[in-house]
Image (cartoon, rainbow, N blue to C red; front, top):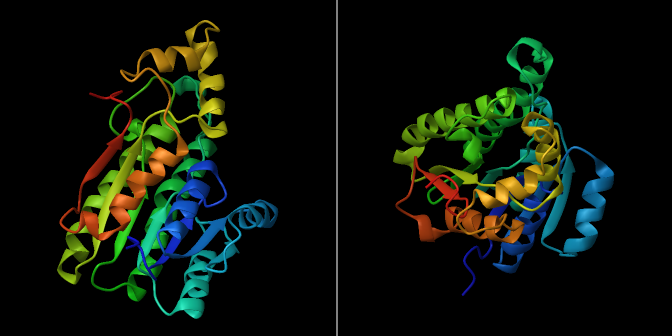
Length: 253
């Protein structure tokens, strides 16, 4: 028995490694999936890889209200409702000292992570009913601080406040809202962050340093984060709301 049979799922950032792995897993579990990403060409490539009649795509800037409404409307027009919203779109921003930190970077990162999650929930919730699930992709960066990671860490903390407030509002409707907090994952997004962080540690290999700080001794896999998203999307998490799910190999233990 598939865990998401006929569930209508929207995944933003759906053409990235975690979004793509999640879409693949959700489809295998019987879902109907809309993946959202910024560029048509990356969506086309993702659709080709997934190759499913239960998949549609929509290009959108998740920080734009009109485009957010459009991707939700696309799912509703095709399948009549929304059961799961996975707010997974993200950008990293620069790493550097506070005195030189670009103000526009703070705004740009906040816009995608926080405004994007807010808008997604705002426009999807009118089409969600009992058993619905909203998953906000945060990070271990939303559970602590690191020097120089101002935009990303701030946005990831803000998402937790959004998630907790929203969870209390929609719980009486039988809708769950939780955040997912991966540790370092072996993908290009994380590699870019680690490359930017390397100069702050004297040019040392930030990837190797990060792995050494994880008790399991390695970065996570996109497929492992997708499994955590499946738990939050499915009825397995039926009594779980307003919570943070950490998938970090023990990094924050």
